[in-house]
Amino acid sequence: MKTHFFPLVFLLIFSLAQGLNPKCDIQDHGSNLQVFHVYSPCSPFKPSKPLSWEEDVLQTLAKDQARVQFLSSLVAKKSVVPIASGRQIVQSPTYIVKANIGTPPQPMLMAMDTSSDAAWVPCTGCIGCSSTAFDFAKSTTFRTLGCQAAQCKQVPNPTCGGSACSFNMTYGGSTIAGNLSQDTITLATDPIPNYTFGCLQKTAGSPVPPQGVLGLGRGPLSLLSQSQNLYQSTFSYCLPSIRSPNFSGSLRLGPSGQPVRIKYTPLLKNPRRPSLYYVNLIGIRVGRRIVDIPPSAIAFNPSTGAGTIIDSGTVFTRLVEPAYVAVRDAFRRRVRVANVTSLGGFDTCYSVPINAPTITFMFSGMNVTLPQENLLLHSTAGSITCLAMASAPALNVIANMQQQNHRVVFDVPNSRMGVARERCS
Image (tube, rainbow, N blue to C red; front, side, top):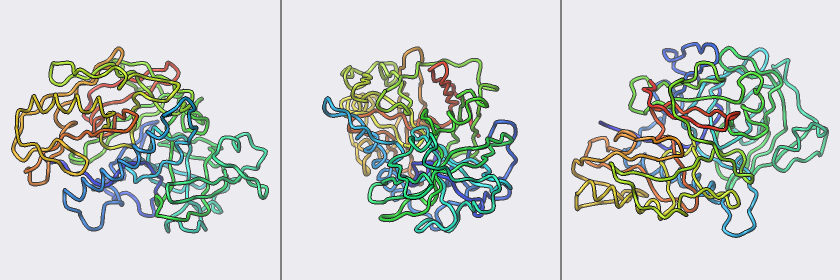
């Protein structure tokens, strides 16, 4: 079993000017969209020069760490909770879907992110953006929103130098600026008119993602909020493994066609971070034994933001240090191999074949048992195997490698999330 991982963490919008491989460009139907890994054979965003397995893992870890540090920075260390926007997260894409924006439609490859809300699209004339952009002048349904629009109050740092509602965002060492806009977005065969998004005009500083973000969070500018009548704030995805032959999963929008036989756990809401999908993690099993974890390490705390979130943009699951150390040590005891090595941020690697136990995340009302394919990284030659988890500063993040080949259902009206094993490709 071979696993190849690459620098990947966030979800962006890409123009089909660099489109899908024609053999992969199968038409989406109804409210179901194909999901591709950004470095699958179908994607135009594969690295031009393949990296070694070790370079891939180290680059992914570095970008993953930046995202986890940002998510953790939203957790208060004191009684005063800092209010920060998830829209400031910047990373590379992981999973992309095909969409159309404007009239006539301009095909795009859109990435999805459960920890972000709004869509930001690089527009024609954007200074510092990539060469491919949304040509708003060619769309008869495009319009720029004015300062009086209600949505103007929902973007970070709105300004009204002219008639347009403008915004500025900080992306680490970078800044981006644009105008709040509206146009029709079509997902599969579903048109969503007057969809509000940011039309980027300028980026500066260190490199930024080549093209925008589409958010599946719970905020007012997210896809769920803007398509509430169409999809009833319900969606699911099945993320394909990078090992699967055609690397294609699915994004299913709306309550129709969602699994009937599936167990759910309640979605929790942090008033300071209302967009994030918090769940109640109550324990972790390694093999059949429940790990002794300090309750405070996994407890949900709405006043600080501590707890556990489900995130599609982080690659490798992170647990706060007391929880991670307890799980890691239990895993090592079960493996019973004395010589443990490290690779970058992974501190539990082996250079000999191992017999690894399963790991079960125990949520309120639901257990999710992960097999080896969701837990272990294997080098190309098979000579190194690592436990694909690491520690986090302040927030537990269940990441996309651990979600692969599962149907994950977000039923926001009923405040619940379901998980069922499913072969996604």
